[in-house]
Image 1 (tube, rainbow, N blue to C red):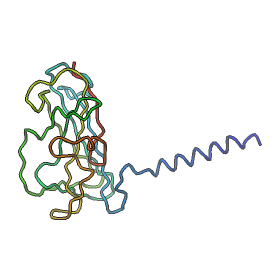
Image 2 (image 1 turned 45 degrees about the horizontal axis):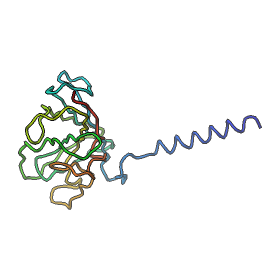
Image 3 (image 1 turned 180 degrees about the horizontal axis):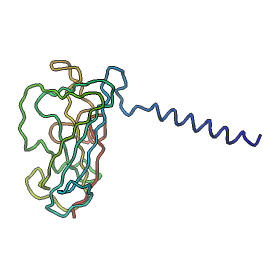
Image 4 (image 1 turned 180 degrees about the vertical axis):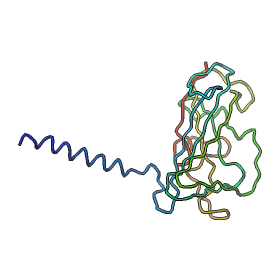
Length: 190
C-alpha cells in the first residue's frame, strides 16, 4: 500500500508527458500539410540579442521559419513579397511601422522551397523611423514577423492564407502566432 501513491503519481506523470509529446503546435496536422514554425529575434547592431535600445540605435529583426516535416515543402506567394514585419506599441494593436511600407514587389507568383527540416532566416534592419518617416517615441514596443504565404498547393490554386502574415499593416486579429507568424517579441526604446 505505501507504493500506491507514488505509483499513481508516476503513471499520471507518464500520461501527461505522452500527451505533451503528441502535441502538434500547428493547426495543420494533416500528413500532407507542411508543418512550419516561425520565430523572430531582436538584435543590436552587433548581432547580439537585445531588448533595450537607445533612441536612434539600429535594431535588427531576425525572422526564421523551419520546416518541421520529414519531407520537402514549398510555400507559394502571390507576389515577390515572402515576409513582413510590424512594430506595434506594446499591449496595443497600434502599428507604428511595417517593413513592406517602403518596399516594392513584383506581382507574380513566387515560391520558397524547403528540404526536410530546413531553416531559412531573413534579417531586416530598422532605423526606428515609423511609417510617417519620423523617429518613433521612447517606450515599449513589440515586433511581429511572418511569412505572407498565399497557399501551400501551388500557384493558381485557391488561397489558404489565414495563418499568413498580413501584407501591409496587420489588423488586431493578425497579431497572434500561427505556423507562419511569430510570437510578439517585446523591446524598449529608451
